Image 1 (cartoon, chains in turn blue, yellow):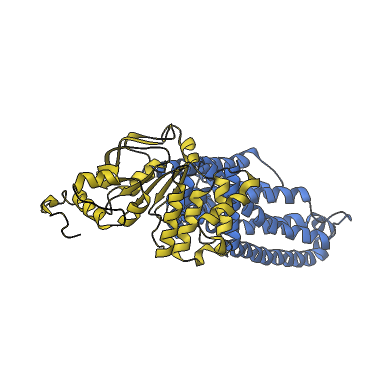
Image 2: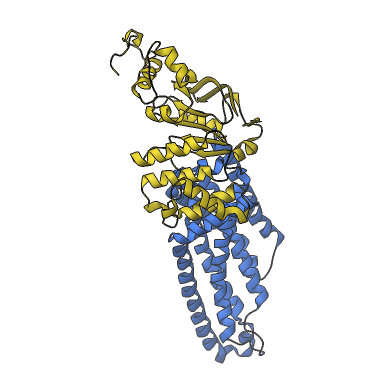
Length: 264
Length: 263
């Protein structure tokens, strides 16, 4: 465990001495802020227009959590998918290129400890990204009040949403880590994992105009489809299992790839 | 300390190391000599447990590299051909990271770093970014990493590459001072280095072990009747030529060379 922690620490040190983590986090913060103000503006216009005609009923159903926070999370999710490959790309590919892979593999460390250490550092970055997104609902609760005088933000829904985003990010990092174990080129690692992750994100387009098995297969594989329930405040076992199985499979494959790389 | 028996390493259809056997005793300093591509680095990689052997066995400190790799890795300090340093880290945090990898206790890390930084003479650059250091310093940071934790066995792949003459002398002195308590196996193609630091010489050629003997033994075998001192570096070149040349097709075996001839 000491070795895994040492690896995680070193990874974080490299992340934050090079610009890569700052750039990725800034991208997420920037777009989250854009989506947040956009969603807020849309909500305001809608509330103003709705009030005279429909009266109280519609207004009561309008709520900031569903219309602003959930929409913000749904839009930010795609940037988590896009930024993850650029954070995971160097994890193992760079070790091979720097020839430091030999150092790791000749240290008294098992491959799974290397994988765990690297993944731990990646999870810290996912946690930071999600924390940045979490600032916006906090801001909202500071300045808005609910209709009955309570809080404007339903924290349970926000929490499940953030959990969903975290699981999504964790899955993207695990896939990226595996791809990074397969190549010496950081760029190839980034592009290949971006392709895989975007494919999983947009696979729902096959649900359009398809029926039966094809449709349920596409829905079942989609990483965006499995995020929806989290954004509505529900934690479904199948969604959690979807992300966890991707994570565990990818980490296991990474471990195998490290072990197998020595035999080449 | 290091027992290698019938070690063979094949990459697809290319044989890099072919049926090599040798034993290095505790406290010995052995030089691994051979032309480029002779299989030096490959042999060292198998010894350190980085790449598995195709056949044959390697035991370090009584542990089989394949069966108990962690026990072996715990006892070896290894400097690979390219110093395994991270350009974005300072040598200090790099060494702290290596100490973590080697499982040294957290409290002792600072002392360990000071010790190896002193041995490798990198105290002045400990807080600079490795990417900005000269090749010689990077090499020495790699060496410091190998010395970390005071391992029983040191395996150094071309430890003096990239160093200037004064630094080479320092590294030589360091290796010599390690002899006795440590078993050192170092590869090089710089002949004077072997003559000055190593008690025994292993000569590899095209993956095969051509000879393994003490310097005196080699002199007696290949330059009979010649009086040489270790200051006379040319003798090793001559022996090396005799060992490595005959395999090349089209060249006559050189033993015809008269004693005291071209050196």
